[in-house]
Length: 181
Image (cartoon, rainbow, N blue to C red):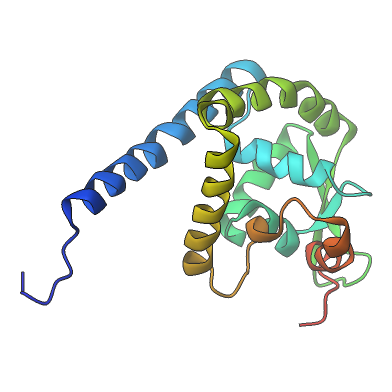
């Protein structure tokens, strides 16, 4: 330890420890509800939810990774597991044969339609309903600041989700992998 280390103040440490606890407890609570009610992990849910929100229920693997804030290797593993259950299917991209698309099957769509209400109730119970409207707005600002630091290149879609009507064309191009880089 050196004198140059910018140690946290007591107030900063108090806030940090609360954030660490939320980061540990919230994923477990979300996974527990989804596994009990839908036989899905939270990440499984996010994959099929993001696919369900596209017009064709299909995304390129790289766009799906961005939409779910995941690495391609992690996503590939989960897609394989969901594919074995018949919830998604992989196919070569119609636009670029070198790329792979993931399509939500009818069974996958039925799964998300059934799972969504309980998942939303759980998210509300553990986060949204515990906060005032002002605190929700503050949470959005805090999360935006943290994500800007954690994802400075904007590789993940969290900062642009859900899309506003004005941003729809730009975000749709990004999610489908057709945006000019």
